[in-house]
Length: 403
Ligand code: FAD
Ligand code: NAD
Image 1: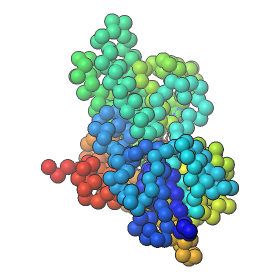
Image 2: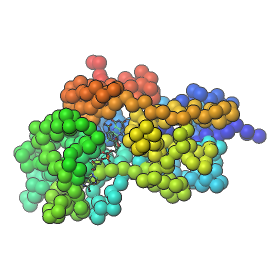
Image 3: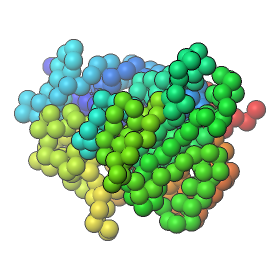
Image 4: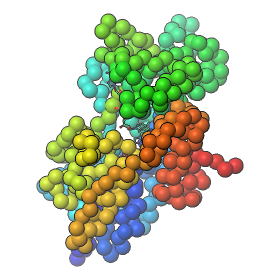
């Protein structure tokens, strides 16, 4: 009879991949069976999705075959879509099968939040996953390719509207200011005809950065031709563009992308978890309240910063740290030891503004601007690759090329 516990990890993103990797090291095959479930046979780097969407990176650099970094002889890998977790029966319902668990790790990432804005789901693209981003890239290229073939083409078909000036929106605009001139050249279009417009409701873009950093970012993007509209609320989205502000002005564009916010994966709600803004408010040890064998990590988890009485922002940095605590605690549960509390160690935040520009803070608030910030972002990206797949993966997919 098989008595060893089965640990099921749902989602192969930052939290799920690092959890699986660490479980492989922490537990012997005799101690536990490990199962990883993911929609696709690849893991994509969510933190590079703005580059995939703009077409400034080879899309395959931003994804990794799961079997290249997770040993299928140690981990049972299932490529399927999670439909629901049946907590009462300790079962995961997948599109094509069902799976029982002794310990469950839910790391299914985020979904775009449109806050019920009329027309947004129907007419806007989302920076949500690998597929949604390559669709954006293809759509933008098509708008440029079509322009000189269509005698009636309106200049606004070349415009790209980005709704929301948080990190995702601004990093995407940073890529676009580099990509659009390239597309104009490629398709013989006057650069002045193609507009990049970012619309942010708050008085300033990147509300979590201080004035110095925001001013730097705004100026860098404006100097390269982006229009940044701040304090302008998007009220509605139509097939022509955004309707904004008190006067309900229409801003027309051929490409409309919404980056106005995220929430936890909807599987959480469908599975009957109690939610705070779409996420599970986890206990200090990252377990779902009332469920001693279920951990919720990454963008699915609402993790309170008890010192500041607000949740930590959903980041890859945090998701990877959740994985470490989760693995320690699963080990503790298997061996009847006390569980540890999650503590976040903030390494800083850097936003890219294209390939060679950026800004942010590292460690205890040291500010970085320009090329040094962009280089730091690449170091962070490459560090993750190294942690996940060692030097081989770093050489294959890394951003810093020695030669
Ligand atoms: P994810 O990494 O998103 O992974 C979720 C996984 O679950 C995916 O593999 C998905 O395919 C799978 N999945 C989803 N639904 C199902 C289902 N029903 N069935 C099966 N599988 C499913 N954070 C930083 O710290 N630094 C940054 O520089 C940074 N840059 C970012 C740039 C962009 C453009 C974006 C969008 C986010 C960025 N973030 C950054 C935030 C960061 O990417 C997320 O916080 C992080 O990806 C969360 O990790 P996760 O493991 O929870 O989810
Ligand atoms: P966000 O919630 O951080 O930003 C969304 C922005 O959209 C906000 O500034 C908000 O004011 C604006 N907005 C919302 N409704 C609007 C409306 N009706 N009209 C106009 N503007 C509106 O979301 P995000 O940028 O997708 O980021 C999600 C998370 O991912 C964040 O917590 C962030 O920390 C993380 N992230 C980090 C990085 C990085 O570290 N470099 C990059 C991308 C994302």
